[in-house]
Length: 252
Length: 126
Image (cartoon, rainbow over the protein chains, first blue to last red):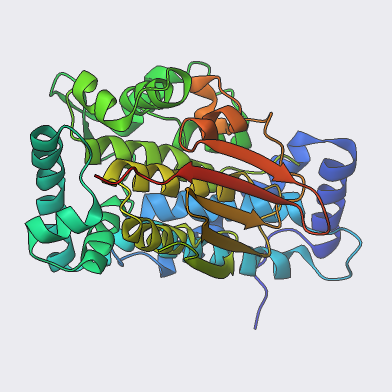
């Protein structure tokens, strides 16, 4: 097969060494740029499975940066042989972790919605959080199904950065616009910082809920009352804040 | 129901929802309310995502000792309660303090296999 790989193996190794040993960021950027077409083609293979290409490209790019950060220079193998599995691994992990919601059966989604309503009703009726057996009784399902149903709705729903997002006042804006508003000096940010802070930044509401729960110590139901959303939604937002850690890039 | 114990070993990364199902299953048998179950699940997820080394597997041991549910996560080598998670930085609270919002006690144990133990008192039955 004719090689279409960017740069020669010697160049790849020299650039990687310049970045890793001398902190030459320009060298790292050259590697990233050189491998982006390859990374995009890998991302394209996974497109059309309920995920937008742009998102997959970002996931794949993250894999590339991880490969560059982690490749062991003492090993005799070529960087390319490390990039491939790292990027593919990142894409597969993305599907496993993030796109679960796409395949959650309709039955569970409906059960989740029913449970969300029942939690609100039973909490206000009893003045305390309902137990799982109480929810099972009210929903007419088994306790195991309640546990499963509660999980179902918490599955992360993947979103494109250009998809519109419902903000507090009901107006719809693209997520990418929100990120740009929050991140000044965004363009100058290094690729890694951009990935770490841009994609994973919490939105205003998530940030407020995290603060209320962990800094102020309010309970989920207290937050739900104060913010005017359901308990289940508070739970979901807290969990999403944690999930954003998953994609965090480790410092070199 | 004293003595209930469940142990599960799973990959440290990517299996948070499996951990949640197991915790949810046991905690619901112990009559914890929805909110407490969710807090316990969130606490363990917080621990899993904070482990410095997430490449291997971890063992979750859930034990009911008659007065509380204890959840041990091991190995937890290198985990410190002073650090904070990037996405939770907005709250300005360290890991240990964040966990204490979710469970009653948090402790690190040394020994051959360092572990973190979370405990939450059982609900008072009517």
